[in-house]
Image (cartoon, rainbow, N blue to C red; front, side, top):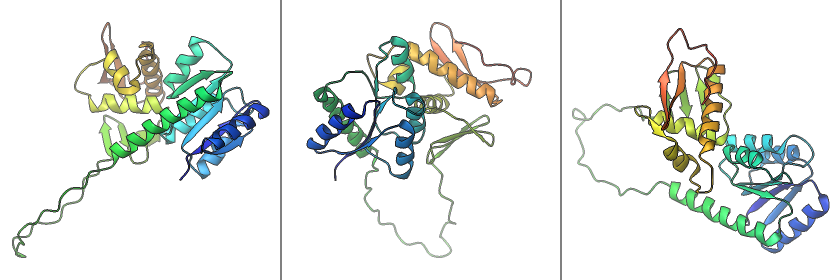
Length: 264
């Protein structure tokens, strides 16, 4: 089956030539004039990879990328005419996989697409549960049989007033859903899983981003946004800064639980 690629681009002529080139390489391609159209199609039918020009008409391309990353792990490539560190860091913290400045050659684009799809396929393969050999156990008499126990829900994770539903990729504060980006979601889960200790910036960077060329500053920026969203949701959970080291989770007291989020 061919890999399906969605593209939203600001220049219809360039996008059509890119579409033709990708189709010659064996990909199935759908072109959209706006990022809104792309997201609407994505909700109806998932694809293998998304390419979004943030200068395309419609909603801000970064917003569309964030919405996609909230509900999917699929690779996202961003194209932009804005060549600045601020835009790059902002894109990476949102979970964007590749950030390219236009114009981009077709050969360079193909190289990135192939690498991302290979990585995505390998991650999916690694995530498949290994088949366990069947065990033959001696039959128990009716009097010896143990009562049936309910299966443990491995998709649930909770701490303080925060509950994670991994199956639906949703995090709740009480009964209210937290609107988190892809990286914010995984950062909060990682910290809840390691709630008993402080976590260094380097460990967060390696565990959540795993990219050598990403600035460590993205950890501070992402933590700051998560901390603000927890405060806005009036959560008793907050993230403390361990100066010169990293961060740790803590519960706010009743006197401070409604205070504004502290800065990094």
